[in-house]
Image 1 (cartoon, rainbow, N blue to C red):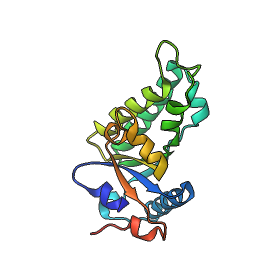
Image 2: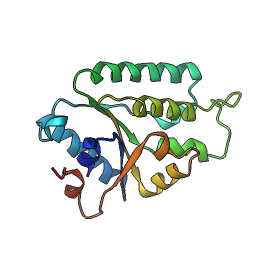
Image 3: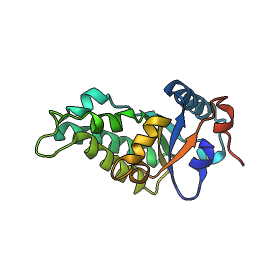
Image 4: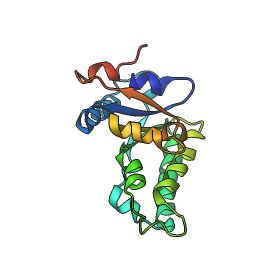
Amino acid sequence: MVLDVLLRKKKRNTVIVGDSVALTEGLVGELMGKLERGDVPDELKSTHFIKFQLAPVSLRFMKREEVEMSLSALKRKVDSVASGGGAIFYVGDLKWTVEAATSGEKDEGEVCGYNPVDHLLAEIGKLFCDSSTKVWLVATASYQTYMRCQMRQPPLETQWALQAVPVPSGGLGLSLHASR
């Protein structure tokens, strides 16, 4: 299923949703291994796997300049691999996208209405949705976190053009295979 989403004509980013983070991250590990071994369809053989994970605690307190620096670094990475066959950027567990929004208290980083998480989400969405290159975003989430992502305004599913790939509790094998 994950490979099917990546191979579609209409580019979609992927969120792997399962009962636990360990289960979904296990699937990401398998995907990374398949890419490294070249055990993927030809269209993905020259694709790189890049981890771009953010610490939720530090993110909440980042200033606009710090967020912009992180985004610039991400854009440089995207530009550098986009011309060389493409890349899958793994942003980890999406819990960081909803924790700050539901903490109930105003973050110190939220000065004059600025929210570093919202800013980062919007810019990542532009970077990965507006690109016609072979660059994908892959994330993981528990079912509860994914439902909270859908309740955001705008929903993260829309903002990042996410396609959910549910992982059955029984095993990971079915989720990685391409139908080709």
